[in-house]
Image (cartoon, rainbow, N blue to C red; front, side, top):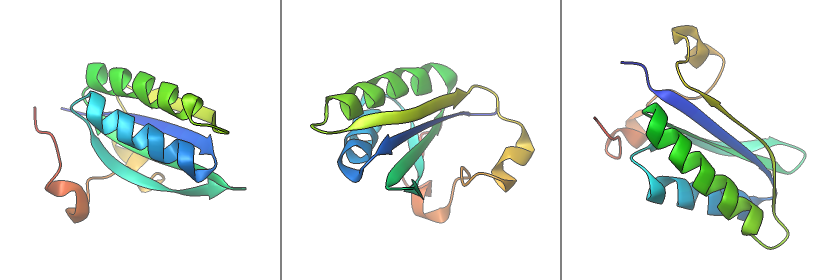
Length: 104
């Protein structure tokens, strides 16, 4: 069963940290990637079933926007990503996240 992908991109590090924290605490999702996007913008990516990712994305966007001086520059959710998406985006489950993966 394919798992949805949710990505939040923020301006600055504190809002992406707040978004990541809120996302993993608000739903059964696995954080699969975080890093520098460009121009001091950071991104965080999660995977899980569609309902959980939607719920977690809402919490992450709210947390990032409420961070002093923080803002979300973009966000998107891909409910049923094609298999070849992993070849262009770092959204695969690695050994580092395997212990934290939610299996539903």
